[in-house]
Length: 220
Ligand SMILES: C[S@@+](CC[C@H](N)C(=O)[O-])C[C@H]1O[C@@H](n2cnc3c(N)ncnc32)[C@H](O)[C@@H]1O
Image (cartoon, rainbow, N blue to C red):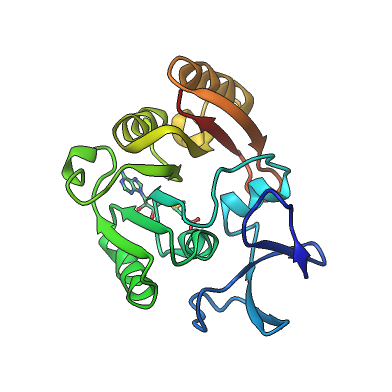
């Protein structure tokens, strides 16, 4: 087991597989746990997580570090959020938002075990609904399949992201326009983002996630 990249806190790598050092002894997703030097490491599958896929595709910076406060939009059952919770550690925090009650139930169960995560059942197209529960954050992470996903992301960055904070935006091209090629959609997204924010990295996520890309941005 060795650090995946010295720039990234608490992300490890062994035999082509990513791991995070687990905050606790819990297992939430039937993930493989590896014990090494007295620590437990949770296997983080790139086919289940766009952030893990982006790392495997060589993202050069993600901004996430020990102590980061994260606004996570589209937390679903909590798979990737649980790894983000490992990365930010006990001194960081993850506000985990999802619109769907069925998945938020699973998220609540994780947050009961993880004191550095809070579930919020809300529509992230309406950040004014949760502005009283969420602080300014170091990172906005978004993974939702909505036609107006770029506008939703920019709205949340505008409202919650600190200056010099990072945004991580997973794009599902088919949710934006199924008739256009993914490349056309990514170019359109780039153009829209560049009007408001600085793009610092970009990766297409194939073969881990077909028709998806990840943009990393920094607030000016
Ligand atoms: C692809 S899943 C996210 C998977 C998760 N990020 C992970 O890696 O473990 C997309 C999630 O976005 C949520 N979602 C879609 N539109 C939303 C909205 N407007 N506000 C909040 N959540 C939304 C869906 O309910 C779904 O759970």
